[in-house]
Image (cartoon, rainbow, N blue to C red; front, side, top):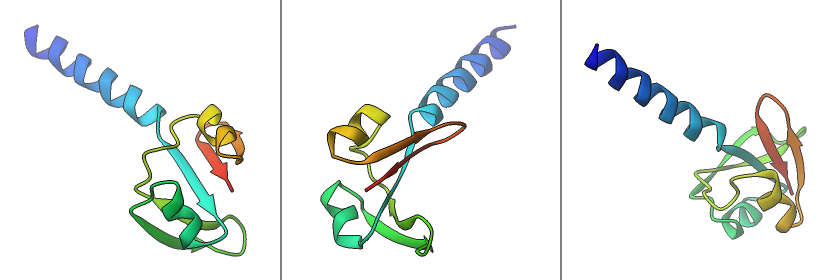
Length: 81
């Protein structure tokens, strides 16, 4: 029973951290770096912009809007600069 409780606690904590993740996109890699991205991805240049991979400064729609971004909050949270 103890192992089940520990496993459940780990799963709940992991889900809470995953919910806090925001995917950020910007028109240039330099803009991504300005919000704290470690590196840039180029998955959807024509549609979303450069993905700001490894960023840790945008954790909610409020953070996104504070940095003058546009937020999409659905199944996943995305911030567009």
